[in-house]
Image (cartoon, rainbow, N blue to C red; front, side):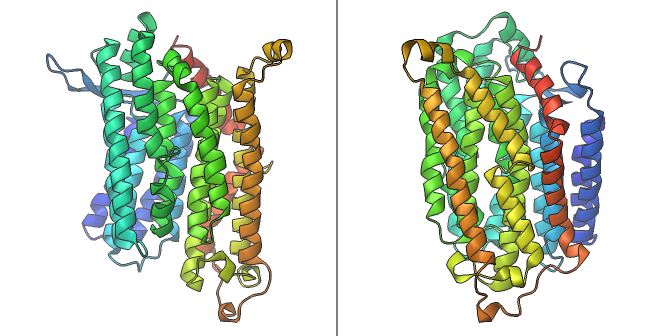
Length: 500
């Protein structure tokens, strides 16, 4: 029952808001309770015990001729940090949203629905509910952008809807193929894992299912070249929606590949690996250089978020427990840093009425707190040591290098393709530094335009608290990454070992 509270808390907040309780105060208090509870659960995970903990497993549909569907929840070292990420970003997103926002009750209900859907998707061990919870979280995303977004919000919401619907349909095809061809006659991941451990899928079946899952999850993650929905969607989304989707929901695709595809489809993945390498470089280099060319801060952050998905895919391509541990760490770190930067971008646009970086400048004189927060978030995104993203990225590179056969390279002189991918991916860090440092320089330093002479910084603790929370998480996880990596490594070793 412990895991049900993570779902009941946002649901209770939604019901109370619908019964006319003060919208922001209600959402904020319940989000704070869920945040604290997620920390307790993450701390109570026992890494000496194999498999899932605090399990809830109840039959939902059990009819002859249909695959079994169970309401099956479980916690391990992979999804516990993602639940923590969800509750952290939810709390910050609600805290920085003014209570006076138009249609406030509806707005905060949608944010809590996104949080509820994300938590349910991360905790679900049944493919049916894993899929349904994620789709459930996407509906309020469309509404938040379409109703509260800035200019071009209808186009952005429609584009995002079309892309993500396409991705969901492709993903559904991959899930159904996995369930039907596995022979497990169940959507339950544990049952599928046991069945495939005893009788692995034929390589031909794997080579069909893997690209369906890769493309389906990949579109949800903004894998190149299916990425164009993300920057424009985030650029016109209200800050809370951009924080929740870029910071949390986008991680569902990477999580899904780790949870659903990696343990079962090793041969299929190997067959498609050259294609994945090309797509990884598309995310890192093509999207990276596109990010450098951006003139507006929200668009730059949107493309930057897409670019950094390439590093997570590099960890997937490593098929190495160390690399995958880095992916889990980077999912949390990127989620926090992206949420922080999108929140600051929203504050800057709201306070100055401007988002073109060349039209800004010198704002550190008027906004020292926001300038500090933006610098810290940008350095985390680049991978500065001491901040959370660094630990994730370096483990991903270690995992990728572990996959390279250097002895064969030394003997034959033939450069492995993955080595080239890794070297070019390292160059992507330089690209990140270029656009991040340029943004810091253009926005916060130099001459302050006269029209911004009276711009106000965040002055009260109440205004600063959500930013302090996100910065504190980046620093704590940067100095003590083992909070996440130890349990994640344990669970990934169990998962990739076939659950034995």
